[in-house]
Figure 1 (cartoon, each protein chain N blue to C red):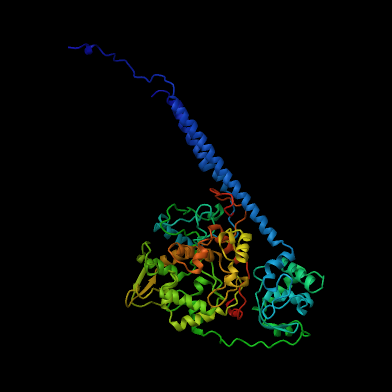
Figure 2: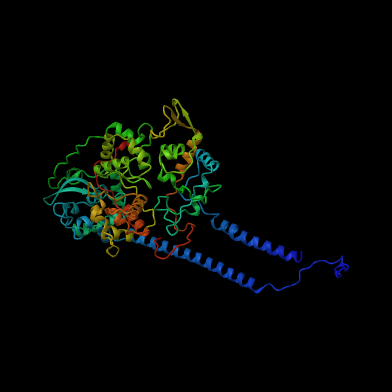
Length: 206
Length: 404
C-alpha cells in the first residue's frame, strides 16, 4: 500500500477529533455537575431493584429521559420536566434508553407511587390496562394457596386473580417496585443546570 | 499464435499513479463542512434562545414574587372583594370600612393564613364566609405586602406589616389548622370587641367511618389505597389529581363513571369497580370535606402571565372562554357540574385538557372538549401551571391531626 503513513495519521486524527468532541469535552462539561439537593443515592434495596431492571431488559422499551416541550409533549403526558445532566448523578450505568415502546419511567415513582399498583402491574399488566403490550413477569411472584405471615399479597381484579389462590411477591419484585417508586426527579433544578436545549424556538414557552 | 506470449516482467510492482482528487469530492467535502457548521450554529442558537427564555421567565417569576401589594391585591383578592374593596352584597364581605381590617395587623394576617369557612357579620351585613387560605401559595414577604396594602388602603392605617409578623402568625397557625370557623371563632380568639357574630354550626356530617379511613389508607382487600396515589390527605401528586375539597357529588359521579366506563382510566377502573356504591358515597363525602393545603407547584414551564389571562379573561381571538366563567371566581368550582380547578396538580390539569382535546378530535361536541380543542400545548401548560399557584377551595374541616 502506498502512502500508508499519511492514511493512518489521517484516520487517527479523525478518531481523535470524534473522541474529543463526543467523549472528552462532554466529560469536562457535565462530569462535575453536582447532584441536586433533591436527589438521593439509591438504597441497597433500590440498587437491587435497579439490577433487576437491567437484568429484565426494561431499558429496551422504557426510556428515562423526558424531553423539553419543544421536542415532545412529555410534560403533558405526566412524565415530568425535561431531565438535566445532574439527574443522572447516581446512575451508573445510566439507563436512559432509546426506545419508547412503553412510557418514560424517569418519574414513574412520582406519578404511580403505589407499591400495590406496581406489584399488580408487574404480575399482570393486562389486569390493569387490557390493551397493554408489556410482558408480564409471573416469575417474580409465587402463587400460593394461603399467604404466610409477612408475605406481601398482590391485589388483583377478580378477573385476573388465580381462582382460590393468592399471589405473593418475591423479594425481587418488591426490590424492583422499590426502585420504580424511587424514580422521582420532580425536585426543581437550578437555572444554570446543564440541559438539552435543542429545538428551542422563539415564543414556544420556556 | 498471438503476440501475447511475450515474456512478462517478473519484477514489476503494481503502483497507483498520482492523480488529482476529483473536484466533486472537494465539493462534497466542503458542502458537508458547511452543513456541519450550520448545524452546530443552529444548536448553539437554540441553546441561546432557551437560555434567554429561561432568563425572561425567571425575571417574570421574580417580578410576580416581588410585585407590590397593590398588584398582589388585584391578582389575589380583587376577583371576590372587588378592586375597590367594596365586596359583593350578600356574598363577599367588604374590606373598605371593615373592623377586621382596621384592627390589629395580626387579624388580617391570620385570616389570610387560615381562610374562613363559616358565617360572618361585617358592618351589620351577614355573609356566608368562604375564603381560601393563602398560607400554601404566598410567602411571608408577599403576605406582608398584601396585608400592608389592604390595611393602608381600606383600614386607614399606614403601619406596615413586616414579614417577621407573618412568620410569627404562621407559626401560630401551624398549631391551629383548618379555616376560621366563621366570625364567631375570630371574635372569640382575636377580637372580643367585634360586633356579635352568628354562631358556627358544625357540619352535620359525622366523622368518617373507621372502615372508610382503612379504605383510604390501606385499600380494600389488599388493593391499592386511595392515599397510595393521591397522597395521605388527597393532595395529589403528578398525574394523580388533588381530590381533597372537590364536591361530593362530583367525586361520586367520577367514581361511578370510572366503574361504568364512561370515564376511562386504567388505574381507577379496577379500583372503582371493586368499590361498593355505599363505599363510593362515603369516600366522596370524606374527600369533599378535607381542607388540605395545596401541594401543587408549577411544574410544566408554562407562562404564568398567559395562564392568568386565560383563566380570568379567556382569549376571544381564539374563542377561548375564561376558565373562571364556569368554574367559579378563583376556580373554586360551581357544584355539582363544574369541579374546583384551583390548586390542582399541573400535570393532571394539562393531561386532562389534552385528553379533552383528543375527545374533540374524535367528534365530541361536549363543553370541555370544544374549549380544550382551541388550546395549544403552551396554553395548556400555562393554564395548568397558573392554577397550581392558586389557593385551594376553602372547605369543611382540617385534615385529621394524626395524619400529619
